[in-house]
Figure (cartoon, rainbow, N blue to C red):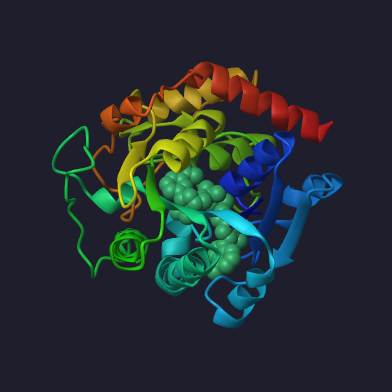
Length: 315
Ligand SMILES: NC(=O)c1ccc[n+]([C@@H]2O[C@H](COP(=O)([O-])OP(=O)(O)OC[C@H]3O[C@@H](n4cnc5c(N)ncnc54)[C@H](O)[C@@H]3O)[C@@H](O)[C@H]2O)c1
């Protein structure tokens, strides 16, 4: 059985490929390197059961080339992410989430492959309730620049649900909340990779606003175990929140990272970013708990593991 991973050269994709290959699975990774990096996946080529195809999932002709592979599972992760990319690549976000998702669902239908779509907590937009349950419909303005990502993911979920209802595709949705760990791309502008890269370059972590805004962070290994549970035990056409219920202020996160990196530096505060003004997003994980999932890695442990990985890479 072959497993297809789109967005394989990104942060989650690289970790997912590695886990599956270590389990002895056959993996085909695809990526167009829009935000992912060749460097990230270089080590995966040492696994004989790994193959890689450079392609854009929005291109239907390239997608057809995948038909020759005996694909039985698809993890569709390909999409640019991050606040900076809302300005730089809104159309790429929307097209990966619509045309790209359609192409990959067509492939799933033809190959009778099971399908997991990587959605996001951003489908809740600027939420009016905390924590967010999967039933919460969200609060999104389609004309806001952030909507390229938020509405893209919402539309993708609708496409997935429609393929389940009308084409009998076995597809499920993971609504991912902030996740961190090894193999962040150097181009990644999300908060943890940003702090790490600033510290690596001898600068202090830079925080937009007063730093008292709260977020939650899940270690990558827990996310991947959640993916497997959703793929294997989740209900067709259903969405599952997956994230940490433990909220932390960005100031505290920066302090924990400084400690994990054994640095002695202060924190720099910058003006608030107008694209990052959302209320706290915190998942209700009751649905995932019913599948048997629970978080196993604390934030402190996860940050230490991430730092160890970075230090090993530097050496
Ligand atoms: N990391 C998180 O905290 C988080 C949170 C919520 C949702 N997600 C979702 O999970 C998925 C993976 O996220 P990530 O953190 O690994 O992001 P990432 O940016 O590191 O990886 C995304 C990968 O997709 C590739 N890609 C983008 N458009 C493509 C296209 N059209 N064709 C082929 N490849 C394409 C990029 O080059 C990149 O390698 C994304 O769909 C993202 O929206 C991630």
